[in-house]
Amino acid sequence: MYAIENYKGTTPFNEQYDEIYEFLLGASDRGLNEHFHWGRFEWMMDSGYLAEDKLTTIAMFRNSGGGIVGLVTYDTGWHDRTYLIHSENDKELLKEMVAYVLRTDEQPMIKVNSLDAPLCEVLREMGFEKKHTNDHVLQIALDRDLHYNIPEGYKVGGMELGFDLWKCQLVLHKGFDHEDEGLPQPLDPDTFVLTPHADRALKVFAMDETEYCAHCGLWYTKGETAYIEPVVTIPRCRRLGLGRAVIYEAISRAKRLGAKRAVVLSQQEFYYRIGLEYSSEFCTWEPKAGNLL
Image (tube, rainbow, N blue to C red; front, side, top):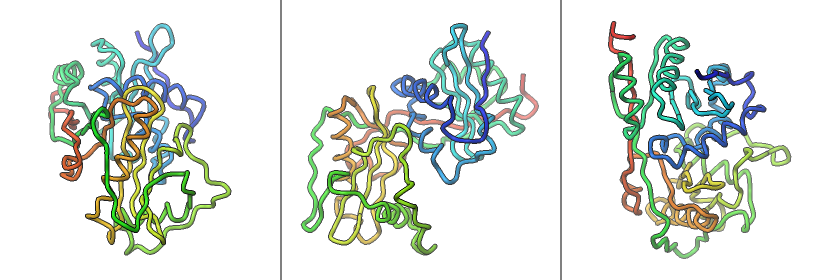
């Protein structure tokens, strides 16, 4: 009933990529898919941790008109698998997608949104059980006040304040607590290229006189939902309100472009303190021993 097409080759951003982006863009505003925004897929394709040898396991399910109605993918590393994103709740489609996972993965682990009742039902019928929660999806409506304050000596902005690729690398390196690993390998600014749908205007930094101190990346092009990733503050500048500032500035920019809400994958109390609320969660489902159909 559905045609299956695998990702071609082991090179990210191939000729199929834009069509997958469009599919995920349409799916990300639906609650049952909100844990896998297109920005997550694009970040994955540009990550140095990408399991490129597994790209050909990514599968698109096409309807009779040739449109993508389902996607089976992992997230960055093969250990974080498998996500079933679908734009139709047809039971036969979902069964075919689960069957594909069973054929191609000796240790199937399927990540499912808590709101995705149709897929949960199919998984139970096919001998799976829910094992544990992976993460929460938190959201913030953009019709609220997004005012922020910053301490004296800091400024908040994006590319309009200039962009230093090395300082950008350092805020991520320090913000993710990698300072004890030494300095990262500098990227070449002459060859550095943003991913296909990244918007430079949505990359926001808090700066002092010497370096970038906090950063919020935001993924948004159109539709209702912007995706927050990553958010970092370097150790010496934490608890100054810079994290709130860069997030609020970034999502305010997305609001002006048409976004209605922003989401982040996290259970950190910090996000609740700045106004995000629980929207959904996603869980890992695995086969019951000796009980697969």
